[in-house]
Length: 251
Image (cartoon, rainbow, N blue to C red; front, top):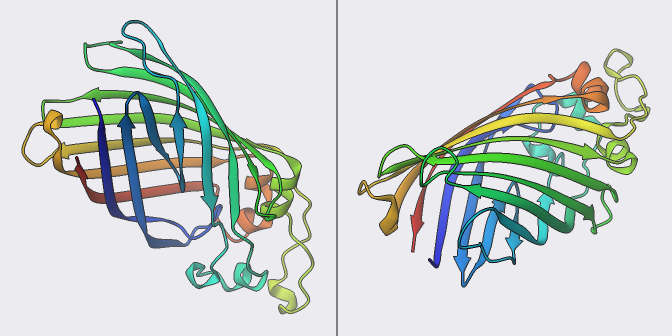
């Protein structure tokens, strides 16, 4: 049926993609369904499914997608003085579409397995490139009051995106011993990861809405030029972790 879930939590993750310094930040989330149209959260954004679910069998999904990317936008959150010296980046606003397919009742009557691909282009003049992000998610209730979602994801970026975030220019403002070697990055698969989300309804019944608490843990590994850039290889780490906890309410 129709519903809307809103939540907010505290997250702890890398200060930028490839960083080995971690920082805390606020993580909002919104998910909803209204008359067959679904609104599904994405990191920093949302995707809209305009295709109503079928009564039986697989469900197709398609619709618009948008997200904000704030990587290295605010230098106050970066604890590495060398990376900070290479300057702020502009905020990217990626707009595009999402398509996918879902399979209900895979292992039990209430679970689902879904696969989707988001494709977005920066329209804010930051990286000016394209990102393709496939994702596979398995959702299942663990009890009447608890549910879990396990997702596996990766992303493919084009040359413009990779050059903007991973290339390194000569910096003459740093002492010689801190200057990173010049690096020119190309596009390709830049990461793969897994996330586990667990939600518990505070009155013990997921079906009637109300308050719930949510925990999230994630791991991703950088590849290609995202791993080889001096921002990661010298100043950071290709292994990236994320933990978050929060509270939500479903109307």
